[in-house]
Length: 132
Image 1 (tube, rainbow, N blue to C red):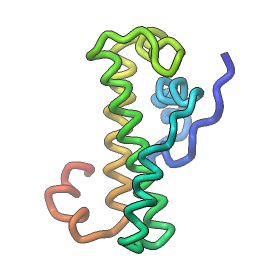
Image 2: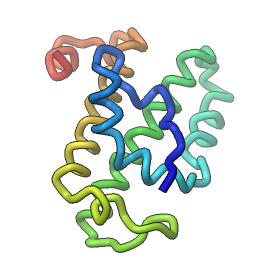
Image 3: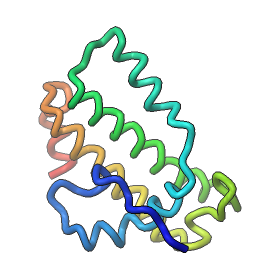
Image 4: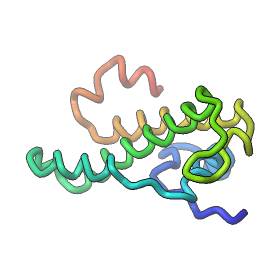
């Protein structure tokens, strides 16, 4: 099975790309069948009023997508699903432990991305300790 290259924003800003490639295989697998991009459209709709700069809104869209896809990986395990978007679920290919590791890793990458926004609400003491 030939997989597309995963979007660059899934990679850790400080990590090793080769390690990330291995850790992110399960999410790369589910991304071969794209969703409807509803969350991205919602972020763009809210930005009609919020007027967040394009570079920051793109990061927010990426964070939302990553959180969503991480939750799909876990949801399929919890529900004992067989298919996701017409293909076998990731944990049936990569195993439950690897998929849980991937989902958790993605959440930490989203924290890293959120901190990069340099917003005072995100860069608070407790939030920064979590990612350190």
